[in-house]
Length: 123
Ligand code: HEC
Image 1: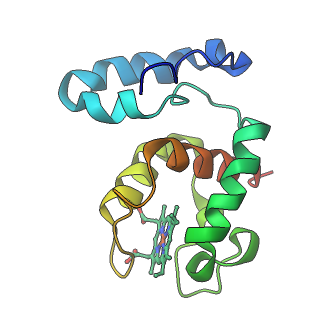
Image 2 (image 1 turned 120 degrees about the vertical axis):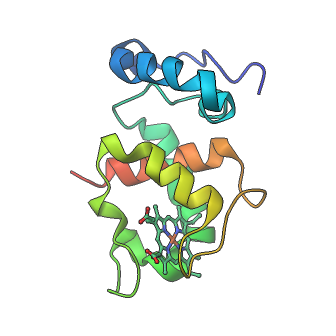
């Protein structure tokens, strides 16, 4: 996504460890790393989180519950830790169990925003 990089996120610089991890990873799965423009951010970005809340409401809430509170039938997304971002992206893009794959339905930037929303709710 040309131009998506460098939107001026202040958190960008702080995510060094994640970033170098990402660089190493990108040798084999370049696509995934390029797709997450906010991949290096460890702190949730309030603007992305707000946008993510909308997207979550449109696509995820029916199964994953109001405000991420699972009804017990599905995975409780608040259990995800910052280190599980890759797992999150893989499961969301490819689907898991009863959950359909979201690749092609929502784009990586939207998935990124949902991630920020989830991280902002972990408290
Ligand atoms: C049709 C219902 C449904 C919808 C809609 C749905 N999910 Fe899920 N989701 C599930 C179920 C069921 C599981 C548990 C899958 C399993 O472990 O077998 C799950 C699991 C997950 C997991 C954990 C996967 C793992 O690695 O264990 C994540 C992350 C997730 N969903 C994210 C999302 C996001 C983000 C959205 C919105 C784009 C979404 N889900 C929409 C039903 C749904």
